Image (cartoon, rainbow, N blue to C red; front, side, top):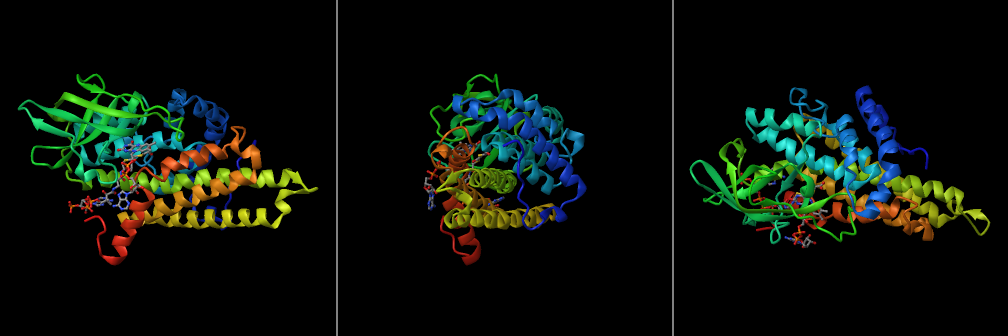
Length: 390
Ligand code: TGC
Ligand code: FAD
């Protein structure tokens, strides 16, 4: 397709400011020009396209809501959401790189770091000179990060860090990692680990069938000496990393809409062009049902994301509300990808079209940042007051 169709069935544009539309359109144009033409090839090669980093920085995808004094774009939450939506229209893996950099690396340094840390790291992360990663998940602690065993000891003039993180986006090429580890009392803290520190390695995870254009790896800490000034001083406990996840999950709730829009748009076009039994397949009732359900679900997801954006901007969105939008919108997108893929028949399984790639990518998106099941249980806890995790 030469143009993206941007379904807006309920005229959501009326709810957006001129700035929102400018930010969105800049991201949309960039994705159309610099991502869509190359991304299938990189996904097939299982390689992250490093040349796009500067473009991501230019559209404000690295720290959209981080204040300009630290190099961020100083935008609001809905702008952040719209940027994620447009990037994920291109590829969930590219959106992952932006999510991690913004919400999981810049956000904790901005919120939990001191002024020296903000000055040292944020401008370089905003410009894309440095790429960061976020180490929470461990081989034996995924959904239950509170059980983590990565730990650090106070050695007087430095900390000694040991342990391993797994499934870490951007790990293979990150310059810094925000790592969550327990101190000798078992309290979780964030530490900034820099590439080049002795005992720190980042082996890449191979053979993924999903998010192939995003680099995933491990973070291994073998007696790494971390300077004391690299500890994030202003928040500790599991709530600190979970607070970062709130921001990333919000972005994913928007991002998933982009993937769904691209699948819908592709299937809609195809349904008008592909003839079988002497008619466009879009004339068959069964195909119309699929398209009607897709546009309905996209519209509902857009309204959920927009309202959440308003509440997030006001500071009133709860973690449970964010969790619901992440779960609903990713589930919506993965269902649409599957239906849209079928509408393309055999062509749907090829790299000629983006749908199969979106479909496979969304298998990661429905798993990371809290699995679908975990988010169901978060809503379950919120409405019953009864905790399935304890
Ligand atoms: P629980 O006892 O409920 O909570 C511990 C403390 O945290 C507070 N809290 C939150 N704070 C901020 N934001 C949230 N969303 C919060 N949720 C809870 C809570 O109030 C408590 O504070 P305090 O002061 O009382 O100690 O914790 P739990 O151990 O029972 O776990 C709850 C559970 C299961 C919901 C949580 O662990 C969870 O969300 N698990 C899923 C793990 C997850 O999402 N991992 C994501 C890893 S990062 C990633 O996937 C990046 S992919 C990015 C990409 O490539 O795009
Ligand atoms: P598990 O927690 O072992 O879950 C296995 C199954 O059990 C799931 O279906 C789950 O829903 C279910 N389950 C678990 N607990 C319960 C329960 N209480 N009740 C019911 N069912 C339950 N992590 C990071 O820290 N940083 C990153 O940058 C990052 N990037 C990622 C990139 C990719 C491509 C992927 C795939 C993952 C990434 N992750 C990252 C890790 C991700 O957050 C975890 O995979 C996720 O939290 C699930 O953990 P797990 O894989 O250990 O699965």
